[in-house]
Image (tube, rainbow, N blue to C red):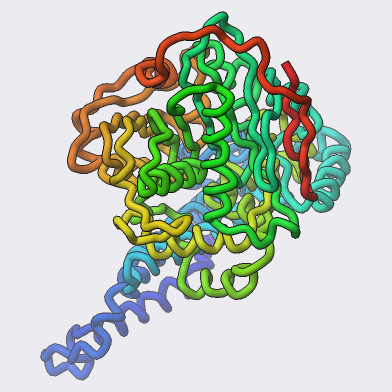
Length: 570
């Protein structure tokens, strides 16, 4: 007589079933003494989530048991519908029942962890924080990330006679020396050679910024210049990558006189600079220089990410002083109201901010590599693990990608500046309150910014949730137009019209973001032409273009580590 196929999980199933009965009793179920009366709810507030978690674990255990039992018996019960998760999309994961079972078990366990957390008796923020941490752990434990449990990597090693493993080790050692996982071929790009190539020159510099003026390519230009304030946590050229996707080059070609701030990569000598320094020596100084060179009455201004937060703060300070220097304001993926900061805000607490203030709040630096690691962790399955798997396990160097090259070219921030920003925005959300902050010696009210504003957000942004960017429309005091683009924080912004990619939404402002989207019109293609049309309305008349941009050659100011700026003279 053939013995039945053993079920190695039966003992665990029986144990969990017993625990579930115990939880039922503790939660107010039938009295085990047999009286028929309900037992007192000794731990009802705490046991209910555990009961739900136990049910989830039992269901997962049964699913795993069914798969392995069917596979051992050769019944074909182990066959599964192809997994949608792209980590396991290759045929190698399905052709071998061992790896297929491993995948199904891992995904089932991952689902169980999420359900357990959903049922946990935690308030919203704590639950979200635990969710972020657990996701990092679950993602790291993926069988795709280990050579012994990745059939594709194993096959590559066999096919190459082990050469892929040797190359993978070389790539690992190289990244270890750099202190980060490589996402692109860094040798494929050089600032000033094939990225940041729009002709221009530095026309002003101080201890914090260099101001680049780009050479005109049209016979006439609008009399009001466009001043761009990029984020200060990476180098200046995010809006000037390659010629076919450069927003700077596009604006120049449309007849705008473009100036752009290049923030210094802070070193020890800048370690005492604060938020007000970034406004006075950075944004406001750049506006003054652009106006002095162009001779215009006012400037159109654009801020990207934290550059937009700095720009809006500077314009609010100028408004409080009674100074009218801006003709318009464009904000790209910018937060002014920090009520909903997504997962990034989960890492900010009073204890964490106080610790930063104690260590670098008066003097010191926040390393750019720290912020880069945080941003990558928000999308670990996109920005970390694929490069670990393809690089270290399969021996494949990452391909050249200009956007990720820029992403790895980070900058340091002065400690006092960073700590002010962290406390007054992410932690206490005071910037949105009229008079909630004092900047450059004056109470700041964003409602005093009455110039026309163009507010852009990206629908899949993991750094600035689009609903949060929409909240800026309720804070600014002038006429506001809101545009929502497809894709993420950077890719949604860098969407040149010639490529005919993606789409965007436009519509009249509503009381809240979701209601706005319900009524918005879906428009195919890039949002750049819509912005250019809007910008042209505020750029003034056309005048003869200057014969040159800048009066002197570029002389970079550098603070180690990292390169600074290589603007080309026209």
